[in-house]
Length: 479
Image 1 (cartoon, rainbow, N blue to C red):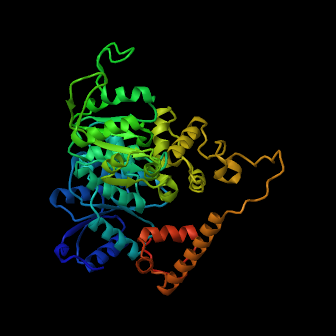
Image 2: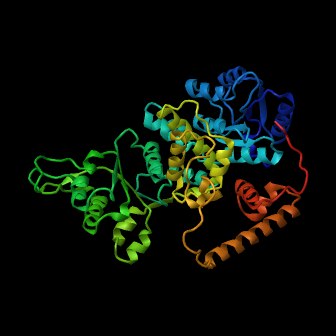
């Protein structure tokens, strides 16, 4: 591992009770040029943090005699600078991983792990921008929930998205957020606001598709008394309410053409008039917009103003669908289970490992919103095994509720999908290429990832997804 010479000799904290694992970790860290400080317990770890600041910290999640998460809880309450926190986690204990994420863990390596796993985690911890959790306030319920939910973003795609969010938050420009329904575009907008200089000012959301077209202008810009039938008093619009803060225009693709022109005017010079008003109102508002539509096509088809599109699209963020980040399903499912078990007074409800495995086989066309609703139904039906909860046909296994019923009509002839054929051929070619490179590198996954020009985590996911078996015995540190 090539170390930045400016980091050479910097102290790193290792909180690990097992002497054998201590020696392995300390030896590797010294070989890489760091100065490891070993702590055998939570108390020793906290004592070390009162004396020093660390470049990064390695924490075993299952310390003997104490819960390894206790260090994270006490750090959150009392402070200390552990640097990025890499947690050594049991892959089967998804609930513990989810809680560690919400408490501020930056990365994970799973037991048993190899030297390459640790090396890759350290590189990512040092050279990726750290999550700015200190700016996501825990002082209010919304800030704490936002911090928890963003902490569940563990996939490479969502980590890249998090970097873009942090950069976008620092610059006061419009942001266009795209993605399928249910992917979490609202969460992205709230994160940008909470990380920006406007975080202490209002965050106002308007769903452009939920308000009737005739009322949306008044909703956005307000109206004067007597402006139209039923306007018995002055109404302050959402733009005025969001002054000095952020307005989030959800489903912007549904905005009527007449309102598109008025919105463009606000974006250009920050002024507008209320419905029925004669005076000009000036506001200082940052605009975030979201859509699940193809706005570029809408521009070509003249259903959306081209000038407005470019005004909104200064920074574009596209939230990937859940099927492209399936490693987050266990964390999300357990997060929703804890949240709604408390809300529905079902204390003690815990998802079974079998249920999580079945969820991992689902395609989730409805994305995170669909997963959330499935978990709600499981709690309401007291079904932690996922035995009685109905699923859409895409779930497989007969929809998850018994054997499928025979069709009432003769089955149609199978359709031949060229897209499916192309996908199948691409998957087969990808599997063959990965297997070949792994064989050439002696199953050194770090080298294989570099040769394939993909991230290490992406390679692990593809190996698992392709069902490839390990071809050689590598030294493991079985923590």
